[in-house]
Length: 206
Image 1 (cartoon, helix red, strand yellow):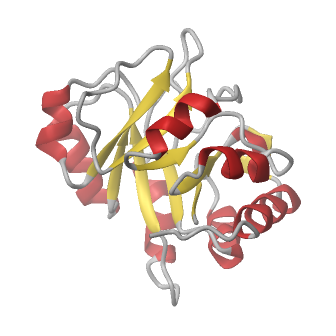
Image 2: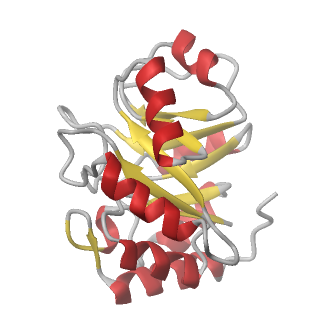
């Protein structure tokens, strides 16, 4: 089971997440987000994570940015993947593959006929691009997960991650607001419980 802790703004939170079993760390480069992180601070986090014995995959979250901007930030900050969480065109997604994957907000974003090898499934909240804490449509997510690898996001918490995994059978889970004290600041105990609960499900991560 892949576990992505998203909206990290503090190096302490990132290191704790990895020590507990997180495989992916998400850094948000959308200026309007309360979890926004600037490039200098992001670089300090990625530099520290790269020194760990088992470094995570660091994902940059972008909303409606150009291909050039995304590639520049990825290079400057040493990101391994880009998560496109806005209204990006299929052409942009194709141009950035295989280092980018699309977030689909169920009820808003139209899914392609041929699903990519990896995508993120989130809830649709009018006027927001994620991180709103609303639960995604697990039944719809489960149908997508049967055909491709997905990160399940949207309203996940330590309390509901086990039933979510059992119903959806995702490749991975993604959490931000469900383990926070405030946007961008994680609660260590909630993070510990979330990751422990997610890892307790015996699911083949491949």
